[in-house]
Length: 437
Image 1 (cartoon, rainbow, N blue to C red):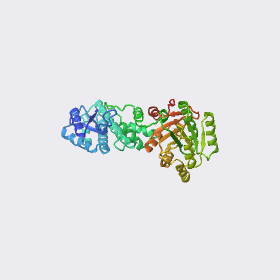
Image 2 (image 1 turned 90 degrees about the horizontal axis):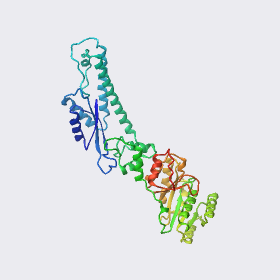
Image 3 (image 1 turned 180 degrees about the vertical axis):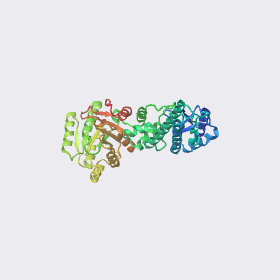
Image 4 (image 1 turned 45 degrees about the vertical axis):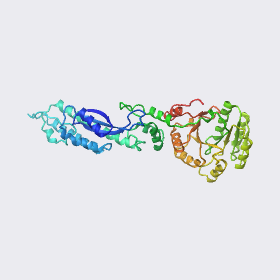
């Protein structure tokens, strides 16, 4: 059996190519929609048709026409058509076995082989009448029938598997290996569609799949938003408050940001802590402030916060450490909103641990979203090998990634977010892709 893949803009054009190459006896095995070239998201998709023909025995055009029309009606959901082909193959296999059992009885009837797969279901009697066929030819026939059955079964399995893959909705190709890779990395279907829509489903002009992991890495590098605000010239005073749940490392991250700022600019820094719930947190930040020789203010009310801002209006950067909040603690969230609710005065960066379960992370994002978050910081990336939640959170919030942390050392373990290197970390979680900060 000869098998070939054809591509065209529509089914009519595809069938014309099939007929021109294989003749009217061709059999359509499957159809699917694909992108034309690697980053072809601006181009319309093409139709890919897989066809086959039995080169030695072709049937008349009239006998084949019904099957071509039927495969066209089935399109991507050709399971019923495949079942019929399987049934035909089983009948042919059964008939060939009957023939081999009787091949010791000579017959003057000329040897006769079945026509192509498109023929109506064959009659066992037609095969039994060929009792004179020699053993080698019957073995060859049985081998071909078994191969046909194997190909049909494989096509059925591919169809079922493709329907279960993430990213099959919203116009994505059922067989997209890129969507499958993103799903395995923990990227939710909605976020995966956004990533793939940015670049397009990636396949080569020759029809070869290529490396889906590399394609996903390229897509993420284009799609991820980052903002290394410290690398920009601070022409105007900047007030950044770190908010988030308890235990994600906000205080240590404040110290790392402060140390890197002083290394770059040397002066004009103020540290503020709102964490009056944990004495250790305020003392920890006080120790860092003394080591770095920068002022520290402790505020316990929104009024005190306004007073501190007026007193230090000459400072280029104010880093504010807030108390960790349980997203389900309504009163605590209201208090935090009273401190930082004015979006004109503060940039609020949500700090999340990369080790948090995706479901819990989505709940945290929803609750802290009322504060009008401006940036995202992910901590503890060295304690996990699953980074799909980073993609999910950015898709949900639309906020840029600013920094990552990969350890407890101050200030070494602070990394400015870079879309290319971050895409490598997400798609190759087994590798320690910790780039220099």
